[in-house]
Amino acid sequence: MASELESLRNTVSDLLVEKQQRDDRIEELESERLRRDNIQLAEVQSLTSEKAELQARTKTTLTPVAFITMLTFVPIAWMFVALGGIIVWKTTSNPSEVAPHLDIILVAFAIFSGPVVVGVKDLMSMMAATRAEKKKPDEEV
Image (cartoon, rainbow, N blue to C red; front, side, top):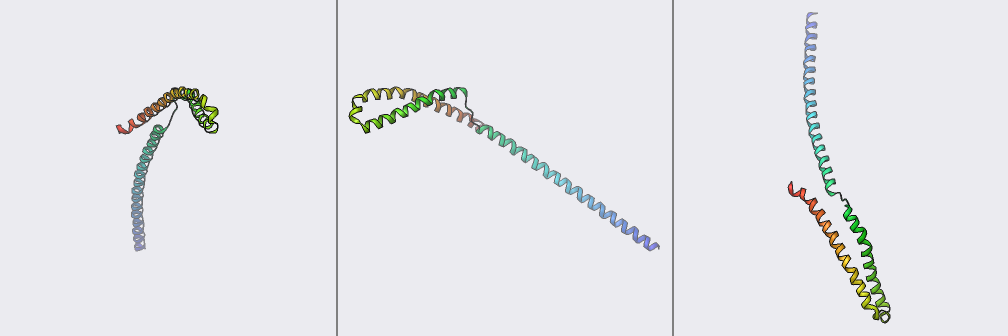
């Protein structure tokens, strides 16, 4: 009976040692998992902030000045294009009818060209300023 009791004590002792080893291994695995989770969380936060920064940098907004410039410029530009199309169409279809009035038509076309050129210049300068403003953060990094 004493040997059986000693055998049971040894078995219980071995089981307790195995349990302690398993508990230690579980703690190691949990700490490793926690470390990996923290690394992944940091990566996700970094990527999220980088994504928000890129979205803010690529977002295009229309300023009130650009809106008013486009509001006044677009009809003039369309009329410029329409007048050019009408001039070409009329001179090719009825040259004898248009020829006496061609000088007045070309004067009207020249009058339209001034505002169109100014509008294009303003829009291009606004686009260039916006592009330069968006490139500044890249140069600082």
